[in-house]
Length: 246
Image (cartoon, rainbow, N blue to C red; front, side, top):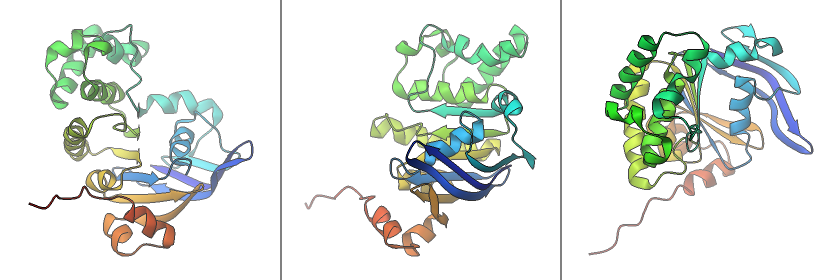
């Protein structure tokens, strides 16, 4: 579904993406991992047309992305950011209805889709009446995913969606997202710093450094066949909690 050919992006003296060539086939789940500043979020922003490459070309469904197509593309791609980005002055129902109303969906269709997604995300229907401040962190992120899925887009991009959650809530949301990705069969790109999270949610892991992909494979490739010393150190840094002696 997505293809980048020799894409580069700079912000002043900083090179965010450096001659990047990569394809994300339709229906696959990929996790983009790496340290801060490696270019992970920039990649998602370029796919959404929120930023524009300095060089290279982006293709979506084999069509080159043009500047005049950016708004239409954003309507076809669900996007979830850290802490959700929900509008605090709107209820959950109001947040979910923003894009469907713009697309002239009927109230009945919006309500039916909201209830369907609430069930899918294992949230009670009463949540639709609440404001974001009345929700837990985990509930806000589930609602953010619901909003991204309201119009049933073929692709879902998630930028550190669980970074601000406590470990238990994060664990529960990971389980919910894994099941969701399996059921929906959408093209999913997940950005995370957390390698175990990436390995749990995605079949393909891409490790970035300084705007380049330095290893592309599955979790076993990174853990057992690291491409270089940086990959080896990155994997080693994902330290498991020590088990106290009894």
